[in-house]
Length: 210
Ligand code: TYD
Image 1: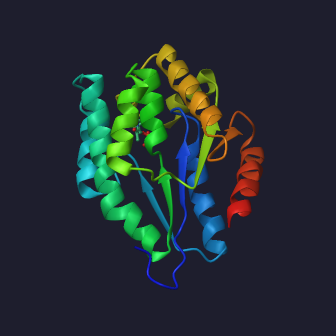
Image 2: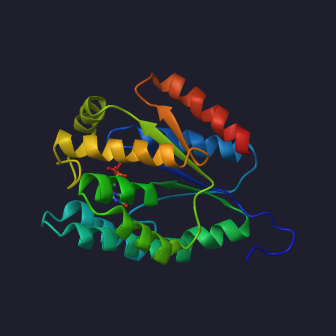
């Protein structure tokens, strides 16, 4: 519960297919909010807690294949901890939280990419977070081709980044479908544009909620 006299912080999530450039935008986004006097917590999924980071290691870097439902359950298990230990306490203190990915990623990757039924994901979402949703989600939209070029340029590929273009096309389609379903919360940013143009678009959106 938020203490009397404290305004609850806002929860902002960043989404996109691998290589969309979210991480690049995260640090200056944090800077904009700090400049506006906000206390900002930056975190990520899967991860954000010691247990969550251990699950991340299993999900991203152990090469063994797993059932799509196992993958989804582990993502939501990490999320449960993340909400309980990091996100909700910070918002209650009045801090702002930026998370590099959240539940939309499960709908896009496990739903779109792996083909899990949306209804199962809806149930897990409700179980883990009830009605709780981010205040704002920035979805950085790039074509699979652009995303692929940027992944190759950065580092050794993790278990998701090793997937084929067809997988990423399904992930992207699922993200766009979610953005269409929740137009108030999810703002689509054309991240095929230059860095400066992307920054400008993000800044306008962020300043409108500060
Ligand atoms: P990512 O956010 O791209 O981190 P990095 O920039 O270090 O590569 O990696 C997280 C991966 O986890 C990404 O490929 C998407 C995947 N993921 C899911 O499949 N489902 C989820 O619910 C979440 C949060 C992430």
